[in-house]
Amino acid sequence: MITRREAAQRLDIPLEMATRHGLPTRLTEAQLAEIEADPPPWLVQSRANRTGKKPVWVDLVCDVCGSAEKARPKKWWPTFTYVSCAVHEPSELPPPASGELRVEMPGVGSRFVGWVDTTLD
Image (cartoon, rainbow, N blue to C red; front, side, top):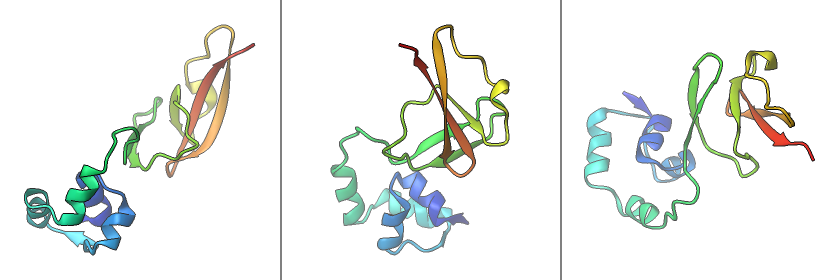
């Protein structure tokens, strides 16, 4: 059995859309395969409307320990130089390059911190 969240990730749709269109909280692999093989009209339309500019899901992987999760990207997320679990110390990441300043962005995914290296002016 897979969860609705896992099904949404594999169908590459937002969790809210999966809920709105009645995907059950748990599905079998056979049920998901059936949806993928013969998608309902709302899923066909959703895929047709994609521009490809913004991904529905992103993979967040800790650059220190390799822990990972999928998350919906937020509009405020810049391009991160590094991502780490919130429990890691900043010193566990490689130091910023000479002439760069590192900015911490907490609250990325459920347990990550994003790090952005910017040039000092």
